[in-house]
Image (cartoon, rainbow, N blue to C red):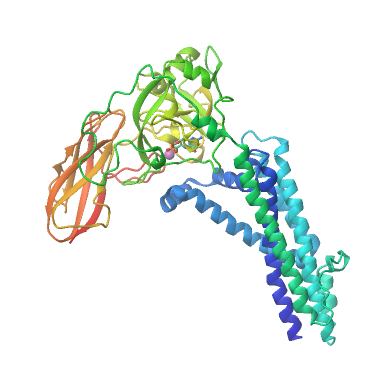
Amino acid sequence: MTHSTRGRRGSTVLAALAGIIAAGQVLGVAELVGAFFRASATPVIAMGSTFIDFTPSWMKDFAIETFGTNDKLALLVGMGVTIALLAAVLGVVAYRRWVLGAAGVLLMGAIILAAVLTRAGASLPDMIPTVIGTAAGLLALRWLVARLHRADDAATRPTGTESSEAPEAAAGAAPGDELPRTGSTSSAGTPGHATSRRGFFAAAGVTAVVAAAAAGGGRLLAGARSNLAAARDSLRFPAPASPAPPLPDGVQSPVEGVTSFVTPNSDFYRIDTALSVPQLSAEDWVLRVHGMVEEEFELSFQDLLDADLIERHITLTCVSNPVGGGLVGTAKWLGYPLREVLARARPLDGADMVLSTSSDGFSASTPLPVLQDDRDAILAVAMNDEPLPAEHGFPVRMVVPGLYGYVSATKWVVDLEVTRFADATAYWSDRGWAERGPIKTMTRVEVPKPFASVDAGQVMIGGVAWSQQRGITKVEVSVDDGAWEAVDLAAEASVDTWRQWSHAVTLDAGLHTIRARATDAVDGLQTDERAETVPDGASGWQLVQFTVD
Ligand SMILES: Nc1nc2c(c(=O)[nH]1)N[C@H]1C(S)=C(S)[C@@H](COP(=O)(O)O)O[C@H]1N2
Ligand SMILES: [Mo]
């Protein structure tokens, strides 16, 4: 009895393993087949993207605050763990009652298909990777479960006395006997159990290797099939009709360790809902302009290149940036003014918003007047003298000075609808964030870093402040709750870029705190009222603690 019970318990663990391997088979095979489809036709991307769309704001915020720009990796890891747990359960169910287990696998397949088919721009053929993957997973599971039952049979047979266990096990798992015996383990003289389990492990190993190879092959194939990188790198832009005003001397804070005034593309923060970066080609790109306008039309990438482009330094900021956070960056953007696009479209009376939509279904609501006034809201095609990096919106994105990215900076933009706030809502406003998102005045202490230790004597403090469209006129710091002292502001490039600053203090050894606050040219001192990022951006004065040795 004991022998057999122990055997059965061990088999349950192996059945769970079989479930996990079969799930790997589903995902791996779907990844391979999916190389011939768009990324959102693969189960991982479709389910992950759907999950992202349904993530409540607080969870999105938690993810960004906890994992920063690794939030997508965290999601994939979380998804992996969840899938593995579900698959383990399905493996055990399939081992006990094949029909139930198989039904569970098919249900999972159906859920994945629902995710695939509800992605923006999905079509029926997008089902193919999941259908083939699910079939492969089902076959793998059946094979592995059959090997397990054979091992169980072999375990009970030689002991004889416990033959009562055998029918039970067999009854609980119908397929065992019906399956073709893949008679590789001719375990003639040896105790059957161990040998047959060896058979299971061999099958499990083969299946796992096939799954991994399919997944890896799929990734390679998908990469090879997309030659966007080469096309992107070979793009050349005409000289801008209106080049960026040269940066004045002294825009960079003299304090060592303060962020560089222009953020290199590779360091630029990235925030979006895209689990796989949309792969658009400049050649095929079209922007549809429509809605409450007198003239609807489409623009191609070449139309933009043929037009008069302008180039500006603009500081982009994310509404999810906590006080002191890093979701802000400055780049030199080249693009076509949106006011020109709208001048051609001629919005109808009553329109007050432009809903911009990306190829992957993200949308932003931008007040119409902001896109028509003389601030330089653009359809950007280049970032710091390079075509837009894929993850920053290649081939075309919006950049709007003064507004948080979630209401203005649509990457991979393909559609502009002139409409009214009363008639349409955007991606994040549907999820509890404010409809409008002007950037709040803010400063960030960058040196010393929080909890850093610095040498006693003269301590250099440095940072950046931003108040796009209004301009920074003053930054003050208070050391150890002392009087507020104005810092030295670095040169201002424009009201739409951040402004750096520096300040020297003499400090004794011990624990110290710095508080910092900025003043802008229009609304004055930034509020000290602490606000969370939801719904329209964090506020409050930053506090940094550090020690002097
Ligand atoms: N298509 C698309 N565009 C998008 C987003 C998105 O999720 N999808 N996120 C917006 C947000 S919240 C911000 S802050 C900026 C960030 O731009 P970046 O990743 O180039 O820094 O992009 C905006 N544009
Ligand atoms: Mo954002």
